[in-house]
Image 1 (cartoon, rainbow, N blue to C red):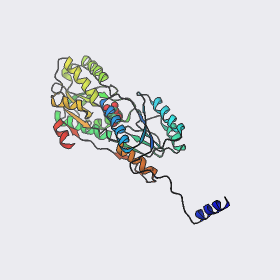
Image 2 (cartoon, protein in one colour):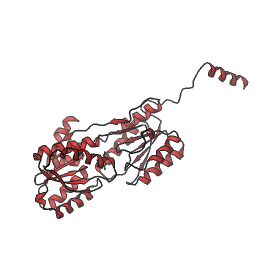
Image 3 (spheres, rainbow, N blue to C red):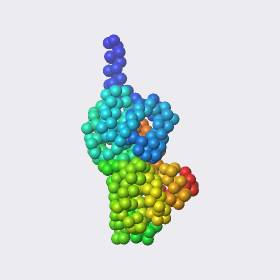
Image 4 (cartoon, rainbow, N blue to C red):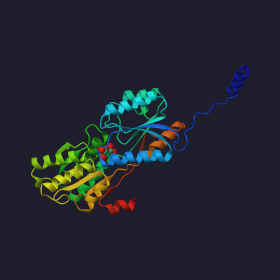
Length: 314
Ligand code: GZL
């Protein structure tokens, strides 16, 4: 025993440092908790499936939690993973921006790195490794710029907002409003949340059509395609022609919106890639291997007016 201690002492004196456990390139063998918001939209479901498939392909042991749109469920899942003691990292898709400081601090205190995906948190950036997401403000700008050119800068717009308090909703609104503010005859005349949900988008659109003379509504700006498709149903049931009587612009580029675009019932959608699992897992591996990472890893998306144009890019 004495010789072992002496050997260790010599190693330490000679500067041999036992290397930290290095994560394999793709993350094989890691246990990662993925806290997902829910399944409120077709895009969210596609995002979940893409992350699970990526984890499977990499040999990552993915612990998955569907929070059913409740922040408290996300926090509970994270706390369970922290307590479990063998979770190497957490990937968090936060439902809203605020209320994450404590659990992020607890994860950091437990030595568990957190990567944010998709929506943002308003916590101190030192509390998470990085954020993988699209640029929501840019998405709003693209949608508004398209509508300005489609209407020559004259349009009364009704807005279907996403989840109140979410970065996706507030930032898309910011970007859209920045652009239309340059055009005095581009006006938002009604705005209400449909929570990114198709049925709620339809219900809110029905209320807009009751409250306004439909002839006074030039366009729908929906923060996601699911609510846009709900609005299309409401417009048709009101005897109007979506895509012509009332223009439709939204975000996500889900398969169903391309059916509407090609039927002439919608006009434009801004792509939001669901494939954020790979950059998120790469960030976990890089961090575990001691690499410095930027605080934001952007995922790009373009505006499309047809499936053919989208397919030409993918
Ligand atoms: C935005 C994302 C939004 C999608 C919706 O990145 O958080 O949430 O646009 C989803 O479809 O509900």
